[in-house]
Image 1: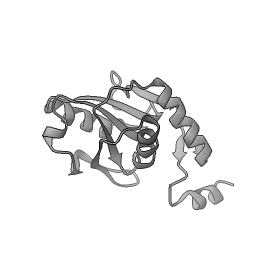
Image 2: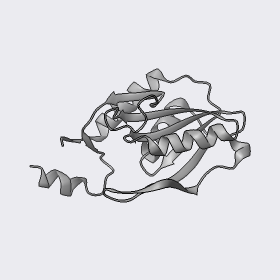
Image 3: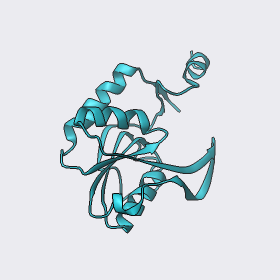
Image 4: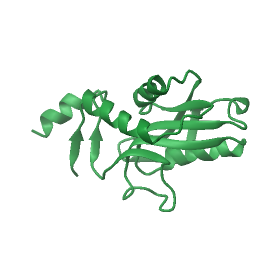
Length: 159
């Protein structure tokens, strides 16, 4: 599988591309940890959003090891979501399981979520009729973000 090693400058360019597509009338931004933390922060700064919520969702317990259902380690209380337009930010829509679990949980309490990611992998998605509402780039590659602690090890192994 092709691996793409991104730089911080490329991340900023992807965030700018994503920002161009986004409406400006959200009530809150919900960041999916951990991958969405840096993109979410950059989006919040550029959109001047201060109402920031966090969802910690666990599907993966290791490389190639997934759970059948998500474990919500942390999620905003219903009153923060009910009747509100929520921009959900993550780094990548790969299988789509995490984003869909968050989307469904927000919808279940009467919120209106829209999903925004830096990378969309439609070939890997478990939801052929669904996808992120906004994305900066389509890819099928393994993305190595600059904040990945193993970035230097992976880069060295691939050279």
